[in-house]
Image (cartoon, rainbow, N blue to C red):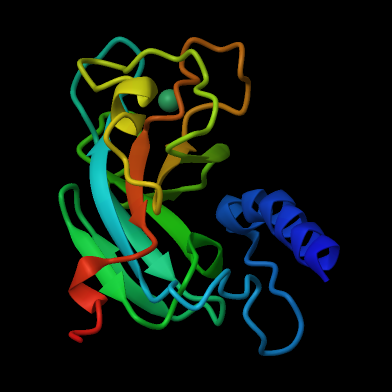
Length: 188
Ligand SMILES: [Ca+2]
């Protein structure tokens, strides 16, 4: 059973890229993709921590609004930088999909949806890719320091799918995922 669960989770990690590429492939049936990993897991909070996205050498920064969808493609909320979204209905970020709407750039028409070229989900104890923070952002390593064991960083690259590109920093949008949000804790 443990092996089955692990297999299921690794499959989900494989598929999350397809979800985020905007294909909206859905699994059959109504069951959640990722079962709760324990009785203590309850709800989810997203914190849109930071973004950095620009047109070439023009340092004007994009305003990126993130549409959050469930697996039925129902829009749950739209996050601006700094916003938080808390829900008792989801136990994993793998239950959600995202669309990135870009504003304030000269090279992309206002409100255009940009698909994620790549994403990465990092926990507090995961190995950190050696990518510096772009344009004054905290590095991934700095952001991981201080995460609790139930928090993760969800990193998104919008500009390129080529890891060798200088534009590939995985920090175009950074969400902090709290898998144990205190605002949903039972009072006991
Ligand atoms: Ca980038």
